[in-house]
Image (cartoon, rainbow, N blue to C red; front, side):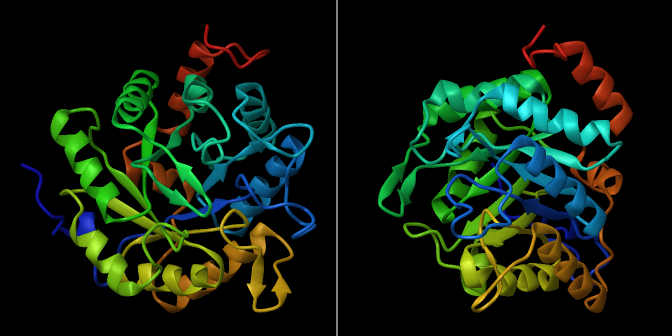
Length: 309
């Protein structure tokens, strides 16, 4: 029987001794350059943004890719290209590939395709919900299949929960054995159709977590910074980036993803939350050391096409 998280590891150490994992979602599925010209959309731009975010203090970059027209795609060749560009520069940042598929813009099979690249982390949207004017469908059969593929390829699921029922879905999948530890949860708050971006909601969802789980929060628009600060104070971890928010402050577009990361680093220092390096984050999340992971990925993946061997 899964019970609520009560340990410092699960809920985050109250004294702030747990190192802070900062993730940056650089692009997303929906923002456009018309909304913010600094948005990275090509593989080269996304890789450069990832490098700058790592330099600013991010341990994880959450990647979406776009097609030649700037529309969301799950093309594994494009994902592989972004990772190749990052690694060619000697960058150790953790690459987290999206399987979201633009909330109904791609098929289930297309959404799962990047998992075959064996990224260290990939998103696992743990339930269906209204998503603005769309319906974001994540059926139980899809989630079980996605969990199985992630397990086979050695990918850590980032269990994305847009409302409390998604945490319960995750607990059920854990009880079934479809999801196995270590558990890494991302609370996505403030989506129209999902849970509101409030501290009360965040506390409620954290209290539902299984033992030993680590958690992070991201919030949409102007709620991004306040919820990140709340998560820091609670001992959790944080996500920032253009996927969720294009502004630095009201009326002022953010000049880059890296500036959003740098702001969190400054705040974390004031709150006595040392920022985790990618290797420290790997150890915290139970990921393989970078060198071992790279060798295993190379053994599974054809470098020219990004296809499984």
